[in-house]
Image: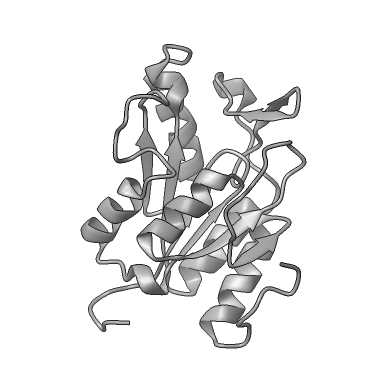
Amino acid sequence: MSAALRPAVFLDRDGVINRSLVVDGKPYAPRRLKDFRLLPRAAVAVRMLKDAGFVVVVVTNQPDIGNGLVDPTVVEAMNARLGQSMPVDEIKVCPHRQNEGCTCRKPRSGMLLEAATQHGIDLSASYMVGDRNGDILAGQGAGCYTLLVRRAHLEVVTARPDWRVRSLSEAVRVILKHKKGNETACPRC
């Protein structure tokens, strides 16, 4: 890692930091502020990353904005609540519809690459934590280590993450051990 660059942890939002709404086995982002609920211990986990010297950036697809299903100000209010609850450096949002072909929408790596430039991040020493295929592919495309948070929803994940974990808290434990050189392989992959 270059002395001038810092490691980061990129976090998906829905399903990693806050509860997704699951309908018929498929996860959805909350569309109302009252439905936005942070997961237990998420703030503590993010604090541990910050204390370990990581830049923490949330990267979230929010196609409901582009599809006209949620007002951007509602997503901004959710992200403000998140930012007030935990020490994240930035929250990057892709507001585009699924078919717009933008470079920021995961599984593309645009949000991670932009954050790397803006925050002086060493992507090869960084991690992407997500609960969906697109999160893992975005992290891999940026050259990051990847951690898949396993959820009960039915989405098939074909990407091969570096680690599979049950929660953000477990992901943080793996990242901190890996950073210290104590864990090189996933115990459950």
